[in-house]
Image (cartoon, rainbow, N blue to C red):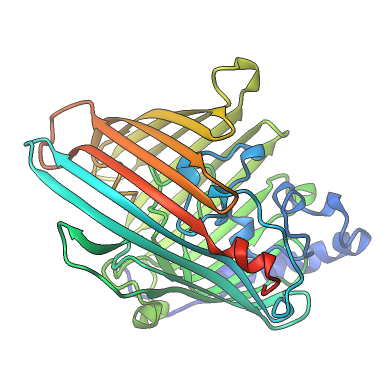
Length: 404
């Protein structure tokens, strides 16, 4: 681990250098669709400034834009039909961006035939921001979640194996500044952004980091639809409370650079480079909408390569199909060569996995996940796993009552 004095200059400096150069273009068409990224223009929320939670798909990629079940994150509104946006009484100052609760059953058996998990869990996910100005260019963002660690997004109910857990944690707390459309700078306790890579080969969706981040979405001037830079600290994997991790703002062991490009309305590609605790990792991913195939709506593939003394690589491939408005099925194959900071659903080794999404109503949805190891080389890792979850979108009700 590298301990260095905190430096806001690397990321903030990029925004300051590029900001004046892009202001002129912003003045020509301040709010036209051409000046917005495709993600922004397709957002259900029409506010002119796109915050980090929207820009990086924390609410999930819309199904019409190639979203998949494997993209869904804690509190992800992509589980549900889009809520009607209201001009609630609190919306001028406060925006609640996600409010979901869920309950799931988890069964895990390892290669020795030992059942290592047989329990019921619950999830709470709240995410929002306080706007410091009317347009929301300056805001304080926060996220409160269940899950006692970097990898955990759920608490145990006490039913089945494991003691009941009642704590919820302030995992994210950061300042966001968007000086012009298409540029955003964040500082504090952050979520980990994902591009086209998922938590199969990338980082677990419940993960968190401390540091500074800049996002630039000006494809007309810079070709890429999204250029993101992070500089900070990844660690404290059993300390989810952001306040207790705040001292690491003076340290740095994690740098990450992301490039993403939309290829028309049918394909999306991304590449990122991460340097964590001295270990360099490259990731690439591609997603293609394929309605002409009839049997497959979306094809997704992602790979990672780790350089250095302990080099290695892995990949995942996934396909998804909407069988019926009330049933979406997916399946894939993953080969992960080592323990990563990815989702615990995808352990080390070769495995097949299946997914299903069953929308019950606009605010209620069921998710099913199952995996089966394709090799027995590592008997101490999960060989079989089943997750069955029921999720409710409380934000839908609050929006209808014009609270937010």
